[in-house]
Every structure is written in structure tokens, then in C-alpha cells.
Length: 199
Image (cartoon, rainbow, N blue to C red; front, side, top):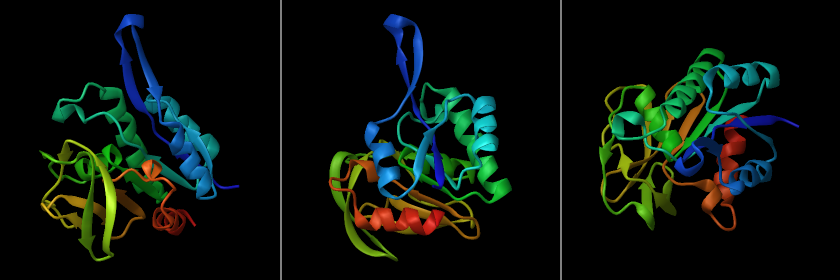
């Protein structure tokens, strides 16, 4: 069975003096529903890099959670791990999918700015673009409304101009602002997208 490694969010538990790596259990369930074996990696770039080398995954997923430090986030280890995974994806042409924070990491990596947005937390809204229209969930405070370079292509937008889906022009890298694991049942379109990316 093909393996997919996925990142984790950082939770700061001050009462225990701990910084915990964790993810919603539905993320692993979604990856498995797509037909792959999910393997989480820690927010430690050196260890995560070793794991990628040992596992030789068919793909990488950058999950949601934690704002980037430059946008008032508190998890620099998450930023560093996402960047390292993007470096590996680009260098080795390993397919990568990022959602919500994961798409924000993709946008930032390729030189695009995020801005504060309103009306995108715990709501559903319609998006439109090259893939038609669909209704998606939304759980983010920062987003991109204009791409600064020619490496990424905006595929889908919300009505207020927020870019909801991007793909790289030549590399197997895709990002969405919605959470595929939060759809019940999982969206057949999201499963098809992931299978098309990872094979």
C-alpha cells in the first residue's frame, strides 16, 4: 500500500509545560479513505526529514492548524517543518497537497502574501472557478487574494475574492483552503483530487 506522510499542528499546553503535535483523527481517516496508509511526522525538521527518507512516501500532506509566525502564529517549529517538507517535495518531485494552513504554507513558500479576512471561520460558502462551483467549509482567518508570482495558478475563488484552490504550474503541488476531513461524508470530489495527485 502506498504511504502518505502528513504534518501535524502544534498545541501549547501551558499547565503541563508541553508543546504537543496532534491532528484531528479524521485526517488519517480521510487519507485511508483515499486508499493510502497515513503516517504522521513530528514538528521537528530533522526527524521528519529522516522519516521521509526511511518511508519514501508516495505523497505529502500539510494539514490545517496554527497561523504562520509572520502572521502572529506561535509555532515556529511548524513553519520550519512545513518548509522542509515543501523543499523535499520540490527537490524530489514528491506530490504535495496542503489544506487550510497547509495551503497558506504553499502560498508563503512561493512568495505570496496573506491578509486578514472576515467571514471565513466556521461557515460554509460557495466557491467558483475553473472547476465549476461547489459548496465548501471554511475555518481560516488569513487568506490570499492576489498571487504575486507566476508559479502558482488560482483555480477557485470565494465570492469575496479569496483564493480557495491553487496548483503549481509544473510541480505536483495543490492547495485548498477548505478541510477535506471535515466533510461528512467525505467528498467524492476531494477523494478524486487526492487520488489524481498521488496516483
